[in-house]
Image 1 (cartoon, rainbow, N blue to C red):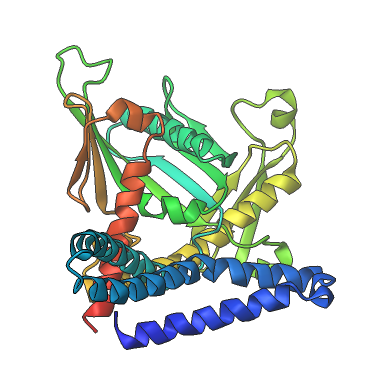
Image 2: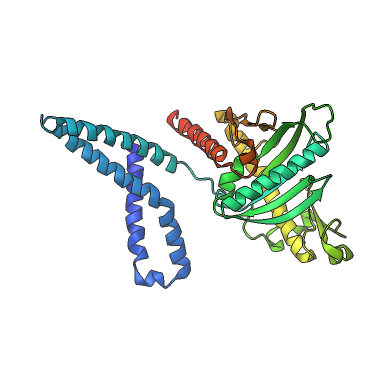
Length: 359
């Protein structure tokens, strides 16, 4: 491990010790805001500090084991322990390096998840429904909550568009690599010849901004339209102009919300989504600039990139960025997607580590 990294870890250890002292100070515990801030700072570095302490213990053990190797009676036992010690050291170093990578400040945020039907007509709309259920099941498995923002039904069990808000720990961090074009290959129920059709949908994952209010944005740049909601929702929702459409004039971004009976609540939801979209445009630009510099395989933020194919006849899912194929399509569509998400995060971390090492 390079000396500069060791110095950085030693500094984190000192910071951790200082924070621990402050957190035990009775005066500080009286200030809830300050206590919360200190707890957050301590929590952010706790794991890497513990790993660094363990790493240093192992290094000391290796020195002792080297001395034991010179003793004929202890040589065999010391040799086995040394191999185990070196293996743990190597694993810890990899973990520590990943923990030291710059954090994406958005990873802990809730997300807006948008799914839109692309090429393929009714079959694309049905696939939107499939992925809507997939992400909903994954949210359940993760103990996250879901709030529906917008839904436009199309055909039997399908949707032209679905927008949901996913709320939970590390939601954006887990789902951010899902943005892009998802392709499905299967025989539609309406296909009498048994031919395989290819359809596409687009997924966008947007980090939610912090508690956006009208005072936080320039409302002179936003056109607000209200209209009568359509579709399911009972008599009341269709009798009042409760649906809200917001248009951001400088960018042309349009968002709508009609899921709630309250126009005020629909407007608040639409404003939150609009703010996330505006922020996401800037975030995409930054990610694409970084990606062009390091030829990144994941995390480019490119919504037009074909990222994954779901092939039903062969029962496989292939992620084209990772060249990874899984043969568990039924479980995958039931929300068992963590292996894929972890692989994407591992690939992203590997790229960042490679970038640091090559500097």
